[in-house]
Length: 357
Ligand SMILES: NC(=O)c1ccc[n+]([C@@H]2O[C@H](COP(=O)([O-])OP(=O)(O)OC[C@H]3O[C@@H](n4cnc5c(N)ncnc54)[C@H](O)[C@@H]3O)[C@@H](O)[C@H]2O)c1
Ligand SMILES: [Zn+2]
Image (cartoon, protein in one colour):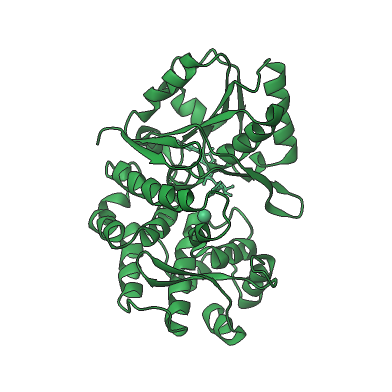
């Protein structure tokens, strides 16, 4: 696949470049600007700095990826480094790393001198299909995840498949879980092309990955453009996430990869959709289960319970943490059919008990 350019129609619009060697385009951003600063995941940088050749002389801060990157101390570190490097609000911050780095860098860019441009170069599958698109930024506070953030759309995004070759298996699986969600939101065409490529895509570094990333970016771009500030329809992106957050909370954050928890969350959301008579496409749960199996993703709590402590009580406590709804009750996204979702649904206690039991 050649590099594809996908527009996100926010105000102003921006382009996401997807495909092998997409990162070559960053050099143009670099040479056009008066001031550039690179915020890099230290592991991704050590493996792939060659892909950003030409930017090695730009000031740079390397930090470890993972949730530890999303802290107040790291945010201050990035803002200090931008200041010490003499950057102005017309300079550009380039992030090079997974979602932890784009979340931190995006927030720093939105705050520095009241806002500078940010360009994301996502180096994990999860960040290419999700985190680097849509402008949501965040760090964690002592009391919880993603509690301080902003919406700051990037000026452009470069999703290069070459850098994904070095991803560990669990990071690959995590990205596939998020891609499965996006394919369900995308509709029948997205879901069937994922099915057609599934056994090939299960292997880290698959050459089919750019087509999947492009499809996910297109779907996310459409959803974000409809609702850039997440006032309503964009919440479909939370499909499977209320359950996933409960799983992650209960097992201990960082134990179950996020997208893997989302995969099980999708199965639970489908089960709930059937139980609440929302599901119209009755063959969908079976189809999704086969797809999860082909992709190497779990489709039930039972599969995770062999490896993690996920008792019903702990999961209920995890759900209680995730009070997204207006009345402080957890809310769920349910499914009618591929591409047709229902937002903001509360659930009877008895149903939750049978799903989590
Ligand atoms: N802003 C959003 O819309 C959004 C959406 C989804 C997720 N997120 C956030 O994204 C974060 C998770 O992002 P992530 O899954 O990318 O994890 P991550 O950024 O923590 O990276 C995971 C690991 O992969 C390593 N890594 C990165 N690139 C690599 C490469 N090319 N080869 C080998 N190793 C590499 C990192 O060093 C790290 O150890 C979470 O904090 C989540 O809240 C944000
Ligand atoms: Zn997610």
